[in-house]
Length: 100
Image (cartoon, rainbow, N blue to C red; front, side, top):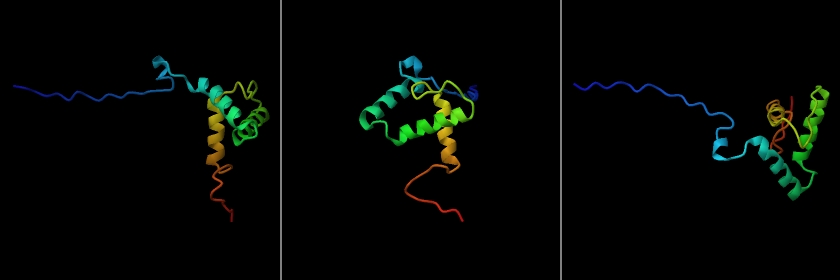
């Protein structure tokens, strides 16, 4: 008499760094390369550079020390940019919004 049992459920949680053993770089290692590429192709008068400058000013205003354009906390930068967009302090240039 064959009985079948449910094999159960498995949950895999993959976090940042999962691809590291495969030799792929982490985001913190990619950022300097991306920054260098942008500056090499477009110079430093870009939206990217202005966002970095605004972020560093924000950090200084909040008392966060040790952040520079070449050495910053990438997760904090991404959070800053996400909050700016979510609160509609920044957004698409294609659809201007009016406030009633």
